[in-house]
Amino acid sequence: MPELLVIGGGAMGSAVAAKLASQQGWRVRVLERDPSYARASSALSAASIRQQFTSPLNIALSQYGLQFLRSLGDEAQFVEGGYLYLAREPQQLRELHEVQARCGADIGLLEPAQLQTRWPWLATQDLALGAFGRSGEGWFDGWGLLMALRRQALAAGAEYLSGEALELLRDGKGCIGGVRTEAGVLQADLYLLACGAWSGKLAATAGLQVPVEARRRSVYVFRSPEWAPGSPLVIDPSGLWFRPEGEGQFICGGEPLDDSPDLPLDPEANLFEERLWPALAERVPGFESLRLQRAWAGYYEMNTFDHNGLVGPMAACPNLFLACGFSGHGLQHAPGVGRGLAELIAAGHYQSLDLSPLSPDRIAANQPYRELNVI
Ligand SMILES: Cc1cc2nc3c(=O)[nH]c(=O)nc-3n(C[C@H](O)[C@H](O)[C@H](O)COP(=O)(O)OP(=O)(O)OC[C@H]3O[C@@H](n4cnc5c(N)ncnc54)[C@H](O)[C@@H]3O)c2cc1C
Image (cartoon, rainbow, N blue to C red; front, side, top):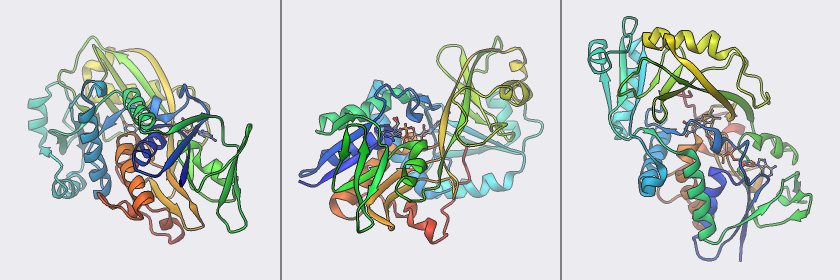
């Protein structure tokens, strides 16, 4: 029986394992170094889903992600609160809106007066336009999604192994011949690199260049005596984002002050005070008196080539498949990538959604498939 060894059992690795293990005739093992997922991005994300992307494929992946979340029912705790993109220049939002509408996304454009009527707590004097996801966008329980994917993989017969991949070993033909771990070498027919932010480093042990770096992103939790009722997930032109989180709380984040790779996973000092709080108070004057509760940090698995996922086999090493580089939007896309890669591996081609624009071959061909809406 052919075997796939998945390296990394986060949302991506588990989604592929769940779909492939449910196909007849495939053995799937998942190598995960930390079953508590303490540093995994899937456990540290903002767990939100949107259709407001610039690439049609990302919109389609989100639409499948949405379907998947809905299929989980209460377990996903999906809140369909919408994303609200705010812009000082209307042109780009209008152009993107056309793309998104063609892809079936339910996004409405709102003039400043309409924004003000709908969300009276929002300062709109500098704005030209907003784009609001009327349905199909919101936030969910990220841990719940990770556990659901892992449970589905186990139920389908995938086996989880505890251990770290220390090195990818090449055979004489340029393929991967095994994975070195402390317990010995693990071998399979195919390998899937799904190590999130650590994927580039592990690929380098086999002399392969995968342009994925660990970029820290911090999330801050706050309470405010002034509430912003009915708040969607707001994307401010300053780069700030915020959304409600449970009873009486908000979370927020934004572009880091220091975006060097591999920074320690402590929330960035000074980002909140220097950049985010002033931007929050400017957009929602009531947030001036907010109180910071706590903060955490996780890694974006940043694809420095074009900020989009790398999905599929590597021409330079044909039995190594990639599912990494999603640059901060991978949790919502994990179900769709899992379904697609399982089809590609089992049937030899994509069946439900063509993911070939995300092929890693675009790097050698120097043909970026850019996603501009990276938050
Ligand atoms: C602050 C923040 C906010 C985010 N917000 C969103 C959002 O709102 N919506 C969204 O869709 N996405 C969001 N993301 C991105 C999302 O979290 C990731 O794209 C997604 O979780 C990637 O899943 P993964 O399985 O590839 O990576 P991970 O969840 O990191 O899983 C990789 C796994 O590989 C394991 N591993 C690594 N190296 C090895 C090795 N050598 N051997 C064995 N195991 C190994 C790790 O332990 C880990 O469990 C956010 C990320 C962050 C950090």
